[in-house]
Amino acid sequence: MHIDIITVHPPLLESPFSHSILKRAVQKNLVSINVIDLRAYGIEPHKKLDDYAFGGGAGMVMMIEPIANCINELKSKRMYDEIIYMAPDGETLKQTTCNYFSTLKNIIVLCGHYKGIDERIREHFITKEISIGDYVLSGGELPAAVMCDAIIRLLPGVLNDETSALSDSFQDNLLSPPVYTRPADYSGWKVPDILLSGHEKKIDEWRHQQSLDRTKLRRPDLLI
Ligand code: SAH
Image (cartoon, rainbow, N blue to C red; front, side):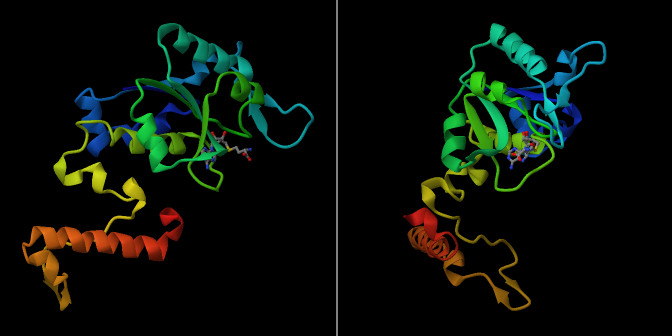
Protein backbone atom coordinates (compact mmCIF):
# COMPACT_ATOMS: atom_id res chain seq x y z
CA MET A 1 0.00 0.00 0.00
CA HIS A 2 1.16 3.55 -0.71
CA ILE A 3 0.02 6.56 1.33
CA ASP A 4 0.72 10.18 0.35
CA ILE A 5 0.05 12.58 3.21
CA ILE A 6 -0.22 16.29 2.35
CA THR A 7 0.58 18.62 5.24
CA VAL A 8 1.89 22.08 6.12
CA HIS A 9 3.74 20.59 9.11
CA PRO A 10 5.69 17.50 8.00
CA PRO A 11 7.59 17.14 11.31
CA LEU A 12 4.28 16.38 13.07
CA LEU A 13 4.14 13.15 11.06
CA GLU A 14 7.71 11.96 11.62
CA SER A 15 7.39 10.20 14.96
CA PRO A 16 4.23 8.11 14.44
CA PHE A 17 5.81 6.12 11.60
CA SER A 18 9.29 5.84 13.14
CA HIS A 19 8.57 3.47 16.02
CA SER A 20 7.27 0.05 16.90
CA ILE A 21 4.75 -1.69 14.63
CA LEU A 22 4.45 1.07 12.01
CA LYS A 23 8.22 1.42 11.70
CA ARG A 24 8.52 -2.33 11.07
CA ALA A 25 5.72 -2.18 8.48
CA VAL A 26 7.65 0.50 6.59
CA GLN A 27 10.95 -1.39 6.91
CA LYS A 28 9.31 -4.57 5.59
CA ASN A 29 7.96 -2.58 2.61
CA LEU A 30 4.39 -3.51 3.51
CA VAL A 31 3.52 0.17 3.26
CA SER A 32 5.27 3.22 1.85
CA ILE A 33 4.47 6.59 3.36
CA ASN A 34 5.33 9.80 1.59
CA VAL A 35 4.86 12.99 3.59
CA ILE A 36 4.51 15.96 1.25
CA ASP A 37 5.25 19.50 2.41
CA LEU A 38 2.46 21.64 0.99
CA ARG A 39 4.67 24.72 1.41
CA ALA A 40 6.51 23.64 -1.75
CA TYR A 41 3.28 24.41 -3.64
CA GLY A 42 2.71 27.76 -1.92
CA ILE A 43 2.02 30.84 -3.99
CA GLU A 44 5.07 33.00 -4.76
CA PRO A 45 6.74 35.23 -3.72
CA HIS A 46 6.21 34.08 -0.11
CA LYS A 47 4.90 30.55 -0.64
CA LYS A 48 1.50 31.65 0.59
CA LEU A 49 -0.91 28.89 1.59
CA ASP A 50 -3.84 30.61 3.27
CA ASP A 51 -5.96 33.74 2.99
CA TYR A 52 -8.86 35.53 4.67
CA ALA A 53 -12.31 33.98 4.33
CA PHE A 54 -14.66 35.56 1.80
CA GLY A 55 -17.52 37.12 3.71
CA GLY A 56 -15.28 37.93 6.66
CA GLY A 57 -15.02 36.23 10.03
CA ALA A 58 -12.17 34.94 12.15
CA GLY A 59 -9.61 32.48 10.87
CA MET A 60 -7.60 31.85 7.74
CA VAL A 61 -8.64 29.43 5.01
CA MET A 62 -6.26 27.17 3.10
CA MET A 63 -6.22 28.27 -0.53
CA ILE A 64 -7.31 26.16 -3.46
CA GLU A 65 -4.28 26.50 -5.80
CA PRO A 66 -1.50 24.96 -3.68
CA ILE A 67 -3.66 21.96 -2.76
CA ALA A 68 -5.01 21.54 -6.31
CA ASN A 69 -1.51 21.72 -7.80
CA CYS A 70 -0.17 19.22 -5.31
CA ILE A 71 -3.02 16.72 -5.81
CA ASN A 72 -2.87 17.09 -9.61
CA GLU A 73 0.85 16.39 -9.60
CA LEU A 74 0.34 13.28 -7.48
CA LYS A 75 -2.50 12.13 -9.73
CA SER A 76 -0.29 12.48 -12.81
CA LYS A 77 2.00 9.80 -11.35
CA ARG A 78 -0.43 7.35 -9.73
CA MET A 79 -4.03 6.19 -9.79
CA TYR A 80 -5.59 6.82 -6.41
CA ASP A 81 -8.36 4.73 -4.88
CA GLU A 82 -9.38 7.42 -2.41
CA ILE A 83 -8.45 11.03 -1.68
CA ILE A 84 -9.25 11.52 1.98
CA TYR A 85 -9.64 14.83 3.81
CA MET A 86 -9.35 14.73 7.60
CA ALA A 87 -12.31 16.81 8.74
CA PRO A 88 -14.22 17.17 12.03
CA ASP A 89 -17.47 17.25 10.06
CA GLY A 90 -16.58 14.09 8.10
CA GLU A 91 -17.78 10.53 8.62
CA THR A 92 -16.58 9.22 12.01
CA LEU A 93 -13.73 6.75 11.57
CA LYS A 94 -14.84 3.19 12.30
CA GLN A 95 -13.08 -0.17 12.19
CA THR A 96 -15.13 -1.18 9.13
CA THR A 97 -13.84 1.90 7.25
CA CYS A 98 -10.27 1.04 8.29
CA ASN A 99 -10.80 -2.53 7.06
CA TYR A 100 -11.91 -1.12 3.70
CA PHE A 101 -9.02 1.39 3.46
CA SER A 102 -6.54 -1.41 4.22
CA THR A 103 -7.60 -3.17 0.99
CA LEU A 104 -6.63 -0.17 -1.19
CA LYS A 105 -3.44 0.33 -3.16
CA ASN A 106 -2.89 4.10 -3.24
CA ILE A 107 -4.47 6.81 -1.11
CA ILE A 108 -3.92 10.51 -0.52
CA VAL A 109 -4.57 11.93 2.95
CA LEU A 110 -5.00 15.70 3.15
CA CYS A 111 -4.45 17.45 6.49
CA GLY A 112 -6.24 20.76 6.97
CA HIS A 113 -5.20 23.66 9.18
CA TYR A 114 -6.51 27.02 10.41
CA LYS A 115 -10.23 27.38 9.63
CA GLY A 116 -10.10 24.50 7.15
CA ILE A 117 -9.71 24.28 3.36
CA ASP A 118 -11.53 26.06 0.54
CA GLU A 119 -14.78 24.15 0.06
CA ARG A 120 -14.14 23.71 -3.68
CA ILE A 121 -11.30 21.29 -2.89
CA ARG A 122 -13.76 19.18 -0.96
CA GLU A 123 -16.29 19.29 -3.79
CA HIS A 124 -13.94 18.51 -6.67
CA PHE A 125 -11.02 16.43 -5.37
CA ILE A 126 -11.98 14.72 -2.14
CA THR A 127 -13.61 11.29 -2.28
CA LYS A 128 -13.93 10.65 1.49
CA GLU A 129 -14.02 12.95 4.53
CA ILE A 130 -13.03 11.35 7.81
CA SER A 131 -13.33 12.61 11.38
CA ILE A 132 -11.63 10.91 14.32
CA GLY A 133 -14.29 12.13 16.76
CA ASP A 134 -16.53 14.95 17.84
CA TYR A 135 -13.89 17.45 18.90
CA VAL A 136 -11.76 19.94 16.99
CA LEU A 137 -7.99 19.66 16.75
CA SER A 138 -5.71 22.36 15.41
CA GLY A 139 -4.64 20.36 12.37
CA GLY A 140 -5.27 17.17 10.42
CA GLU A 141 -1.86 15.63 11.14
CA LEU A 142 -2.74 13.81 14.36
CA PRO A 143 -6.03 12.56 12.88
CA ALA A 144 -4.12 11.38 9.78
CA ALA A 145 -1.62 9.53 11.98
CA VAL A 146 -4.45 7.91 13.96
CA MET A 147 -6.21 6.78 10.79
CA CYS A 148 -3.02 5.52 9.11
CA ASP A 149 -2.05 3.55 12.22
CA ALA A 150 -5.48 1.89 12.28
CA ILE A 151 -5.14 1.02 8.57
CA ILE A 152 -1.51 -0.12 8.51
CA ARG A 153 -1.83 -2.58 11.41
CA LEU A 154 -4.44 -4.42 9.31
CA LEU A 155 -2.13 -4.97 6.31
CA PRO A 156 -1.15 -8.63 5.92
CA GLY A 157 2.23 -9.30 7.55
CA VAL A 158 2.26 -6.23 9.79
CA LEU A 159 1.02 -7.92 12.96
CA ASN A 160 2.22 -11.31 14.08
CA ASP A 161 0.09 -13.93 15.86
CA GLU A 162 0.55 -12.44 19.29
CA THR A 163 -0.90 -9.11 18.21
CA SER A 164 -3.42 -10.42 15.70
CA ALA A 165 -5.93 -7.77 14.66
CA LEU A 166 -8.77 -10.26 14.37
CA SER A 167 -9.28 -10.54 18.13
CA ASP A 168 -9.21 -6.78 18.68
CA SER A 169 -12.18 -4.71 19.72
CA PHE A 170 -14.72 -3.77 17.02
CA GLN A 171 -13.94 -6.70 14.73
CA ASP A 172 -17.25 -8.66 14.87
CA ASN A 173 -18.79 -5.65 16.62
CA LEU A 174 -17.52 -6.88 19.97
CA LEU A 175 -15.15 -5.35 22.49
CA SER A 176 -12.06 -7.33 23.51
CA PRO A 177 -12.19 -9.54 26.60
CA PRO A 178 -9.93 -8.60 29.57
CA VAL A 179 -6.32 -9.77 29.39
CA TYR A 180 -3.85 -10.73 32.14
CA THR A 181 -0.20 -11.71 32.42
CA ARG A 182 2.23 -12.83 35.13
CA PRO A 183 2.14 -12.86 38.10
CA ALA A 184 -1.03 -14.91 38.53
CA ASP A 185 -1.41 -13.49 42.04
CA TYR A 186 -0.40 -9.91 42.83
CA SER A 187 -0.95 -9.11 46.50
CA GLY A 188 -4.08 -11.23 46.49
CA TRP A 189 -5.45 -9.87 43.19
CA LYS A 190 -5.90 -13.07 41.27
CA VAL A 191 -6.18 -13.88 37.59
CA PRO A 192 -9.44 -15.79 36.80
CA ASP A 193 -8.82 -19.54 37.39
CA ILE A 194 -10.14 -20.49 33.95
CA LEU A 195 -7.21 -18.73 32.24
CA LEU A 196 -4.75 -20.90 34.17
CA SER A 197 -6.65 -24.14 33.51
CA GLY A 198 -5.04 -24.88 30.13
CA HIS A 199 -8.49 -25.86 28.81
CA GLU A 200 -8.44 -24.13 25.43
CA LYS A 201 -12.11 -24.59 24.51
CA LYS A 202 -13.36 -23.39 27.89
CA ILE A 203 -11.01 -20.40 27.74
CA ASP A 204 -12.38 -19.48 24.30
CA GLU A 205 -15.94 -19.73 25.61
CA TRP A 206 -15.07 -17.61 28.67
CA ARG A 207 -13.44 -14.96 26.48
CA HIS A 208 -16.39 -14.85 24.14
CA GLN A 209 -18.79 -14.45 27.06
CA GLN A 210 -16.61 -11.70 28.56
CA SER A 211 -16.61 -9.93 25.17
CA LEU A 212 -20.39 -10.10 25.01
CA ASP A 213 -20.88 -8.94 28.62
CA ARG A 214 -18.45 -6.08 28.19
CA THR A 215 -20.04 -4.97 24.94
CA LYS A 216 -23.55 -5.11 26.46
CA LEU A 217 -22.40 -3.04 29.40
CA ARG A 218 -20.13 -0.49 27.70
CA ARG A 219 -21.24 -0.31 24.08
CA PRO A 220 -24.76 -1.73 23.68
CA ASP A 221 -25.02 0.27 20.44
CA LEU A 222 -22.60 -2.18 18.81
CA LEU A 223 -24.96 -5.11 19.32
CA ILE A 224 -27.96 -3.62 17.55
N1 SAH B 1 -13.35 25.19 11.20
C1 SAH B 1 -13.35 23.76 11.17
C2 SAH B 1 -12.24 23.19 12.03
C3 SAH B 1 -10.90 23.36 11.46
S1 SAH B 1 -9.71 22.57 12.43
C4 SAH B 1 -14.68 23.27 11.72
O1 SAH B 1 -15.21 23.92 12.61
O2 SAH B 1 -15.16 22.23 11.25
C5 SAH B 1 -8.34 22.50 11.35
C6 SAH B 1 -8.10 21.17 10.67
O3 SAH B 1 -7.85 20.16 11.62
C7 SAH B 1 -9.23 20.66 9.81
O4 SAH B 1 -9.16 21.21 8.53
C8 SAH B 1 -8.99 19.16 9.82
O5 SAH B 1 -8.09 18.76 8.79
C9 SAH B 1 -8.32 18.91 11.16
N2 SAH B 1 -9.21 18.37 12.19
C10 SAH B 1 -9.61 19.00 13.31
N3 SAH B 1 -10.40 18.22 14.06
C11 SAH B 1 -10.50 17.04 13.42
C12 SAH B 1 -11.20 15.82 13.70
N4 SAH B 1 -11.94 15.65 14.78
N5 SAH B 1 -11.07 14.80 12.81
C13 SAH B 1 -10.33 14.95 11.68
N6 SAH B 1 -9.66 16.09 11.38
C14 SAH B 1 -9.75 17.13 12.22
